[in-house]
Amino acid sequence: MNDLSRRRILRGAGAAVAAGAVAGCTGDGGNGNDDQGGIDGYLSSANNYDGTVVDMTGESEITVAVGAGNGFAFDPAAVRVDAGTTVTWEWTGRGGQHNVVAAEESASSFESELAGEESHTYKQTFESGPQLYFCSPHRRQGMYGAVAVAG
Image (cartoon, rainbow, N blue to C red):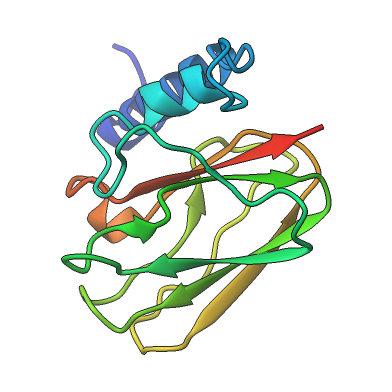
């Protein structure tokens, strides 16, 4: 009998979804949003995503709210930054405890601690992308986000 546990199967399925989303990132399709195709697929059921990748290129550091809206969203859900930009996630204090976890395990994976207090922050600098992520306690509630890295 196979030695696959439920957790390993689910982890593999999640990685396959993330890999498929990243594989679909082929450019802006003429709409001005780098990596829009892969981000759209990954964020299709995300809270607070309306199909817009917010352009924050030109900034050395940007902030994304954790626990936005009804407490189960990132705001903005998708951003475009330049390589070398530091993204700071700042907790709103709404929605309970959250974290920020890379959707794909790789050398550039990241994961914040679980926290719920307002003004808690976590920082990550990105050199390439897209970087797809989620909140593990609220993944089923649609708490997903993405960072497209221009350049």
